[in-house]
Length: 441
Image (cartoon, rainbow, N blue to C red; front, side, top):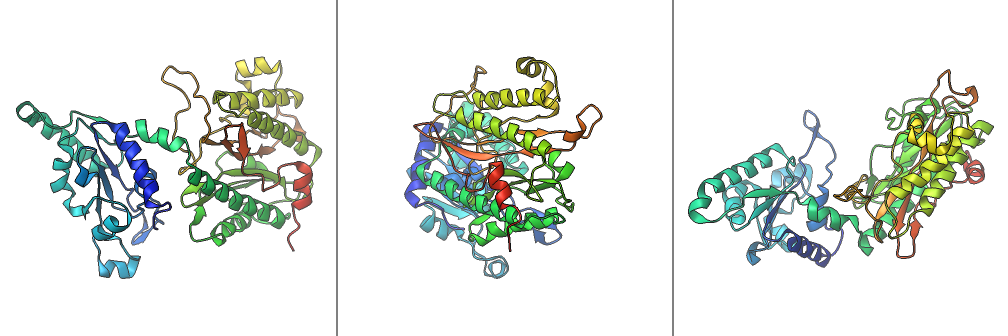
């Protein structure tokens, strides 16, 4: 994979990051390749932070960013060229390639990391590194700090502590640049078309796995840079009440609702859509009643999104509607305020309404300030809105509602004027859904 943006975009990001870390030296580590079995690897997915700052997507890389050294402002340690391995696994950039194509001021084989890292880090007051990035690098960082602790009294040099790069990088990644928003809109369009295709293909008796195949084949058909943002969820009947159902192994039956939670990633930028629809193309009265409550909750939550609004207002807007709906459905008793205060809603709606979206489907960014107050929404943030109702099969639940699971999820950009919903290319209103389901020829 080559850099998704031009070299200037990555350079500008690195300069912002270097300014943010002050006198520290940052070490970013690529995720390792994972073995599926024996000599078969899981398809590689780059580390989001390293990719965000460099565009480099090969495994085994280490990036060192040093604000004090112009000749090593960005140093990349990468796999060497290896004709034999490249014949099996594809081309590698090698040190020469990353200098030429990825803006590295210096580049070395990754096997030289241990001999060069000490000198790169020595002028820093801190190592900016995410502990837990890997056991081997955690060990290296610990050894560096132990060594400098011994020599610092004599030399006066060397970092004294470790700081998490998230303090700077999460804030940068949270507010999306115009180019990032462009990719996320495109990923949302691809995902919406795939969801619509699944609705058209639906019919009683179709397997959950077949609907999964419809969705994911549309992702892959959209282009070589498109893949699934996360394992797709296709739950029919009672499976729709399982939040992260993953088997996708049941055959649908006439009268089932089908819940599909799936997103496309374009150049690693994610979308995340959930739709719930009747497999036979007609909601039952009880299904429609539950569906319309969830839809009203979603629309109330979306309406709360605007610059300056607290992040928590999204959940509170949805929760107020859902609690009132639970009372109307005779799932709970009392007023909406009493239900929320007693957490009586959590049996039927047990998750938050929203999360940030970006290079990761559950993207970086704090939801609360250090004092505990909610973060205020800002233009450039991208988030999901996904209320739901999940009604178990239980004796104390009205029989007509048992086993109904509904979630509706859209992706929303916070704009200067308010918000932009980018996933409504797939129907959400009941009459639209009923008109679409089962129309594939």
